[in-house]
Image (cartoon, rainbow, N blue to C red; front, side):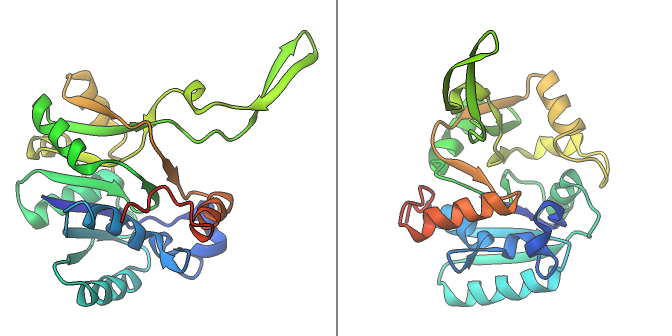
Length: 236
């Protein structure tokens, strides 16, 4: 099964880094986060990638070619999908490029220790059009337990108190193409909303590690985990 990675956005919330390079090439431990994502898939048996590029696409194309040449069995096809194309548009263009087949898809700016083979099996067994990996958002703020205006207890917010959110790491059947109406609509809007309304979207609940890299703080958090040897997504 091909893996489609959405790697074309501007990364404006990480402008400290993305003024000079595309967000997927921002480094964690000396390696682009795109490298980390590819490793997560590759070491679980998925070796065929389509990288949907946009902003500063030439840099990602060069990185992809170099990585493919350095690793036997790895196939990476960079696909320029436009600088202003939405996430839904990039998936649509990826399917136009590879043809009608099931795909795995994820964003180019987040890592996790998802069991991808289990995810794939789960998708096949439920038989619906699409699977999204549901994750707990990282706890960001200290939780206040109040007694009137008095802080009775202060503690870190628990992830389980945050509910479930879209963590990416999708498995999509080609029938999803019918919901990709144009290149401007984000995948998270009409396509996923409508799939959910029709009962065709199933959540694979991942209780393990998941972390996006949307801000400099999150980038530094991932850097700390890697450099201290405590990176949960390093499953190789």
